[in-house]
Image (cartoon, rainbow, N blue to C red; front, side, top):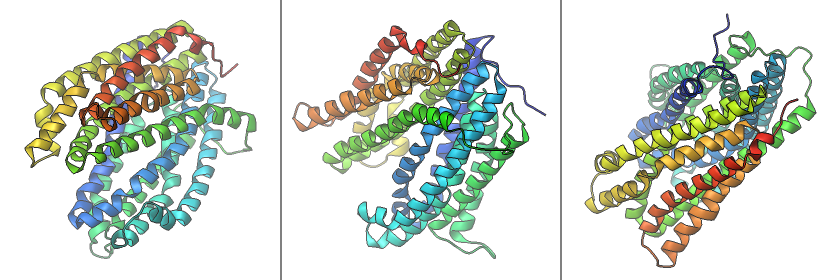
Length: 453
């Protein structure tokens, strides 16, 4: 029996945005829980174990970003065809993009598994943790096909406005991961102790379960999407279109990740104390970003469905609502974090009072600009939903590589400021990026994009 989905082409846009964004935010929070659960149990094995696990996350994130382009393309095309009420094309797009992602993940998994020791050598991993890091990383690479498959599943369902099923699956598998982590790490009864690699084995199993449930939902037709592989053959023109839409999004995510890595390098230039304060502040900011990304993805679906339904004015109105919701909600969150900066920083940082105060100062400088970040992310979602992923990519690259990183580098390295130059680069980037994105949105050229006939 099919679940009732949200029809975003009629009714209240604000209710639709809220109904979409809250489950997406919940699912994103649960996704971060995987890393927290692994850190909780692996941390009991000592610093070497934590280092062995931590080294694989940047590499894994980079690989996932390569699949994210097809995931975004799937969301956009499915949303537009769903808005046009062309459900046969929704199923066709879902089948094509999912098949392509599975094949791509198998190839990437094999290459990454083979290159794993060379990657670790290139990263300068010390011999004392090399074997554990390699074992852990290779198991994670084996799970890429399940990871990519579940990401694609979430993206396809988001395109038709179904966001609760992925939330339920994430909640169940996270709870299971919390139980399986100590089982595989420390062993019990007939289950051997895998040590550090046990966290990867647990994650591999829960990712397999998530992907299996997701594919069951898609092929069983529990939602408005029902896949079949009968008479399957690749639709090359469609896949070319998906690649053209998705490639800029993959580059955008990779550019964002690389930019943040270089920002960490600027913090490291000032020494361990500044790096610790920056680490805590960036962790709190990443928590705020989760809420902004929820609105970005909700806005993408709302705009995509209404563009597909040829309701351009409604799509524009939905984008404006999303931007104001992002500005107000993240603005309020920023005000709260400004006044509670001290206890929030102390939650993650204890010991040296000087370092704690640097972290508090970082948060107070950044927090009052969070509303601009929320509005900008919502409007980036508008560009994606309308198929203007190239513009979305350029705006992100400008924000990080033209505004934030140069300001942080010149202000700190040229002696204009101390580490506060790094702190100030965040609100400056948020405000200027928001104004630039609003200008781009107001030009209205995004409304001229047509992905479906």
